[in-house]
Image 1 (tube, rainbow, N blue to C red):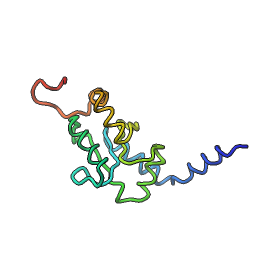
Image 2: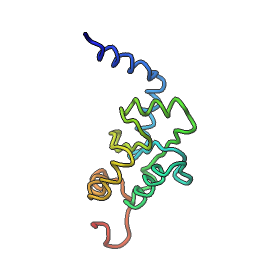
Image 3: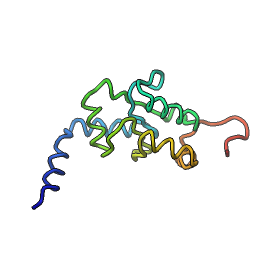
Image 4: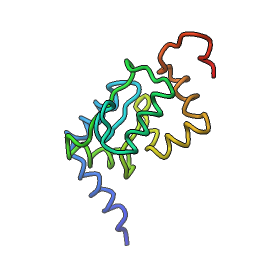
Amino acid sequence: MRPAPFLSSFQSRLLSDNTKQAIEKAVGSAPVVLFMKGTPETPQCGFSRASIQILGLQGVDPNKFAAFNVLEDDELRSGIKEFSDWPTIPQLYLDKEFVGGCDILVSMHQDGSLAKMLEEKGVLAPMEGSDAGN
């Protein structure tokens, strides 16, 4: 009995090559990429809003950040969930690696690991003053 491999190969076929390539291109379009509902200026859900706020509080450089509105494209909306194997949106990628959704970002923000990761990746905006190390 081997239903799992059949399901896995079936699931991988659901994501078309075009969609997969488009997502890979989007993920590689900037060092920090957020797939969200709405835009950074007008988030369309509380989780997307919270994720944008966290990235802002962390001081992510806007020149190193890209956001993609999954509400504009149903194929992207379903495809990104399969691509990352993560069921919810928003989704954050850092240097083409999946970090997590809003719950993960909140946790990492609270424990300081997100700040450390963003600093290590060199994606923070240059800061004026001596507060940069905190």
